[in-house]
Amino acid sequence: MNAPINYSTVLKRLPKLAGTDTQLFWAAIPFITLLLNISLFGLHFFSDFTVFFVSGILGFIVSTLLWYLLNNISALTKTHFASDRYPYKRIFTTICLYVIVTTLFLTVIHWVYDSTSLLGYEFDEKRYRWSLFSGIILNVFVTLLLEGAAGFRNWKATMIETEQLKKEYMQSQLLGLKSQVNPHFLFNSLNSLSSLISEDQEKAEKFLDEMSKVYRYLLRNTDDQLVTLETELQFVKSYFFLLKSRYSDGIAMCFDVNESDLNLSLPPLTLQMLVEAAYNQNTVNKDRPLCIEIKSLNNGWLSVKNNIEKKVVDDLADQSGLENVANKFRLLCQQNIVITKTKDCNIIELPLIRQSEKSLV
Image 1: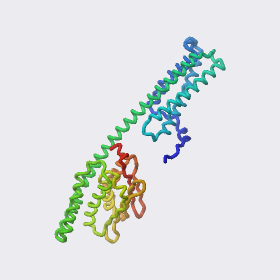
Image 2: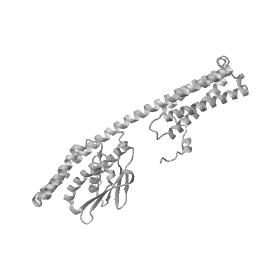
Image 3: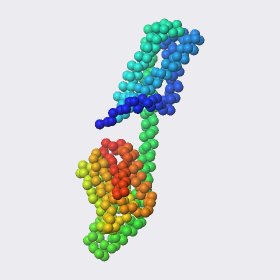
Image 4: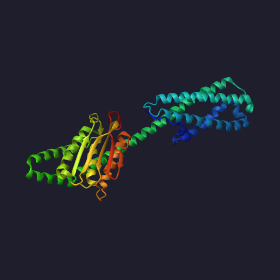
């Protein structure tokens, strides 16, 4: 359920105009002032200097107040309909409110001028109706103009965000490539394979099979922006088998993943980066083994948890890998990963991406 809207907070922030809206204000106010005074005095507004000067100033003040009021209405409707995917309901509501407020505003102005005979004003029903008609047409025009300007700004922001997403994935592919050709990982894997061949041929065959799965995944899936959790878990299990063969009882991994989450998605290599960061940043020994837990949370989130046996080394590559993961989730589903660190453990929570959230992919 959406949180209730705090309208008092919204009102405190008003008015806030974007650059385009400010330019439109200074372009429109003189025009609105002119229309208002013509509706009040007709051509007499131009022939009498006193009327022109005094009513011009009053008209400018009244027009500014009306603009301020309509701007508040626009901000409130944008806040109220912020969750709507399509703007038609918001635009229709805004125009209706504009028309009602403008009609009341113009009616009050004509009534005040008439009841006080200000500057010799005499009520003219024809000019009054013309002012209402002009106000309605102007409201519709300004609303559509502002919506068009806002739509253009949103389109431009989306294009910038899309380019940023492409840049993030180029960085991700570079980071993934570094992981693929990491000479230490490849050397250690081959070393382990060499030892197993002489000690246990059956285990060596299993090791070679899992190693081929790891590199097959790296070659096939790193170009994809998303993979299913099931696919990523299969890869991580193969990747962990290689680590387990090397570290034996010094490292352990357990899984508690809901079956309903397996079809949800996440960027490829996400779990591998987090597992790699865990064993790179911590000591691995049999006395105090490194334990990594991958677990489903509520509402389609996933956590990766490990105990802390901190190395006295600052691994910048791991930090950049975690930042890369965070940026990809922020861009793909507009959500942030949650990082919780205590003296005993490190927990990273990831939002799994549903089919309906793949709008930017």
